[in-house]
Length: 149
Image (cartoon, rainbow, N blue to C red; front, side):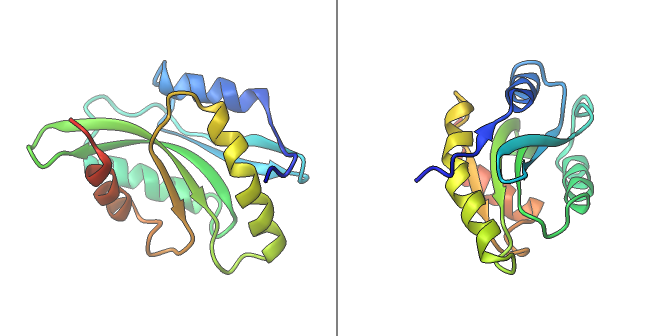
């Protein structure tokens, strides 16, 4: 089911900037006026040779900007694989805390597919509904599990 919420062109531009040009460490998106998914925040460029701990600092700083409010996030993860090589992967995170009003939950859930379809070539996705799973370390564990070298 689609909510009828549109994806703003700035979201597509930000996706291309982060995926193809590596201009941002993250993009935070929100639904504005129940009509359009818009860019709320663009993160700075990832530092060269970004470490997993530095990436976690960036992640935690980004999370503070919206707290428990639902958001869609494109995040460029830096992590260390079990073979000790480093990797960088872009993921879509859908954050909607269980404590959020049901109406907000419904619009974010029903709009996610339209957003995903707009992001061609993005195949890593996380859905977080609890603060314990919306942690860098937890997402990296899942990222490593999903990673194909």
